[in-house]
Image 1 (cartoon, helix red, strand yellow):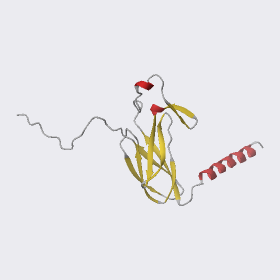
Image 2 (tube, one colour; image 1 turned 45 degrees about the horizontal axis):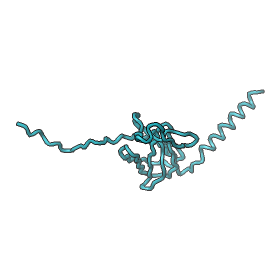
Image 3 (cartoon, one colour; image 1 turned 180 degrees about the vertical axis):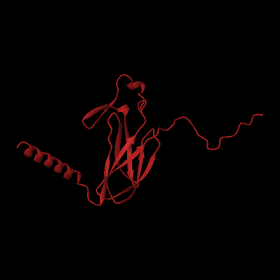
Image 4 (cartoon, rainbow, N blue to C red; image 1 turned 30 degrees about the vertical axis):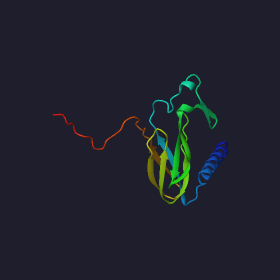
Length: 152
């Protein structure tokens, strides 16, 4: 007798979750962006003024050290759409996009710009776009044609 009410509650919760997921039009797909960012030293180096008192910023309901939060600019098909964050608190954005090929561009200070293309299926499905952010090497200049050693 207890099983029937529990089963009905379980079915109702699952149906509600399915309805919440189905807010995507049938001609769109959800594109979930996932960032891969190298671990390492803090993004910003503290200056002599702030060595004793670290700056902080508010992200959502959290207060985080500013030196460890990286804003990543996102553009879709050449239009700026917002930022994602990487650091202690990761924000992985998702976009509801109609059927067709889309070009994403990502930029973040200290990292090489990244461009990725994805084909939105437009089937109400969820797709994942994995973006690897690579640090820029500072102070090094690369030559595509290094000169050979001229010593005899």
